[in-house]
Image 1: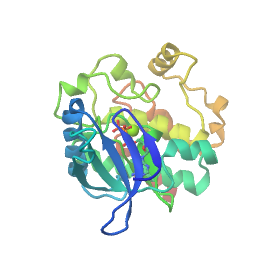
Image 2 (image 1 turned 60 degrees about the horizontal axis):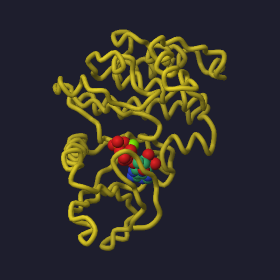
Image 3 (image 1 turned 60 degrees about the vertical axis):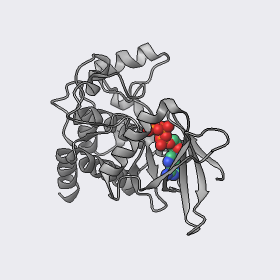
Image 4 (image 1 turned 180 degrees about the vertical axis):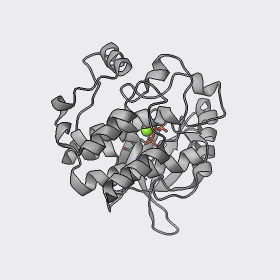
Length: 260
Ligand SMILES: Nc1ncnc2c1ncn2[C@@H]1O[C@H](COP(=O)(O)OP(=O)(O)OP(=O)(O)O)[C@@H](O)[C@H]1O
Ligand SMILES: [Mg+2]
């Protein structure tokens, strides 16, 4: 294992090389017995999502990777996305514009269409959980909190990151695919403007603004963005789950505007 690529709630991710093929990979190190169940869930969802150009490519799992330190430790192996996560990319190169912005919207919606068709709710969608390929394609990653839409009890749990979690999560109402669509709206807003529509000085302010759902479009430099894209973002950021389009509807609308 080589340099640290990033870290999150469930583990540290390192750049590594597969000795058999010399392939560059990303190795997510998961340690401790307590995370056994989470690990099994993440692997289950990574296998369930299968191969798709807008979903992280999972290569396999290695058990017992640190036998002298932690007999429970294991590594999840992924393709290494050399451009890192979308959050870091926006910080380094600024908001996406023009064709790059259009591609980001398409990629995110296509990834969501794929997982939603399989009955999977991601539940942690944010720029940190989107990775960027060399060619600029965006893939969904970070499936550690995913759930099947049929897991009703789980879909009542408080989950998601502050600022990206949908209003229904704070209201303790059931989550579904539309919960991901709200997080997609925030992620795209940030990608296009470099700013967060609801982030406040304190967590309480952020939650209050999220629950109100009022966006001051002119304050974010997003007023210059195409009117159709702004309408799409406004619908995705609706407090009411029923007003938010599904990934499939959003993609169809977006493509028809682009072709018109
Ligand atoms: N395949 C990869 N290629 C490059 N960087 C990666 C890769 N996978 C993860 N990273 C980096 O590591 C960070 C943490 O990874 P990941 O999101 O999988 O872990 P986590 O946040 O602990 O888990 P989860 O999001 O499932 O709760 C990412 O935000 C990203 O910066
Ligand atoms: Mg993550």
